[in-house]
Length: 258
Image 1 (spheres, rainbow, N blue to C red):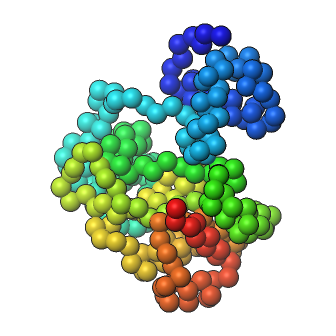
Image 2: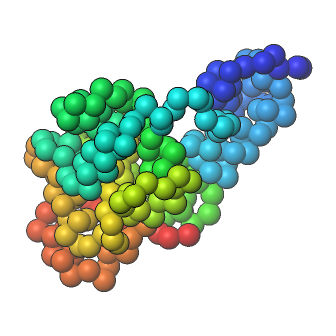
């Protein structure tokens, strides 16, 4: 089979569908017929999923379209950096692209959420999302940890109509620099993979983590919260341990380091 030219978006959707079919037990040949992809493309998508989870299945964009990230002038970028360095007002746990676009508009800069997305992407501030389904199928120690430790907790939280978040702490390594841009990032992926982020100019302190945890708990309106978190070790923090003991409805699932 020769696959006709597909846009990156359409190819990504078909690769995702191919993985779903393979998970349902269809052979490579059957999946190729159903999706219109070649057998090697189906196999490549399946291999990407097995090695890196769902976030590894879509094709990665090549290059950057003209105009992306350039729609924010220096003044708008300065506002962006200032907002990312503080907690947002209201119930949002951190800054989403939509919230940032609204904050920029309030400061007199008409910028779309898509332009904000491109700006974050160019500065390595858009970590790829991870799902609990991908963790469940992850090979190696991460998958075993999820199945043995995290899965049952998440199921209990969902049965109680609580919220499940996935997030972490990381150091951004932007391809393009911007004066004053903090490199340390706290991030979350919520429903439908929406990214929430806050940036710091120094490694996060216990108070920064607890600020994030408290915002998630406040947003849950009395229902339990499960947070799968990667990139920090909390067992040596007495402040975090005391907070967790005082908030039994908050379940911190510290994903092990590779």
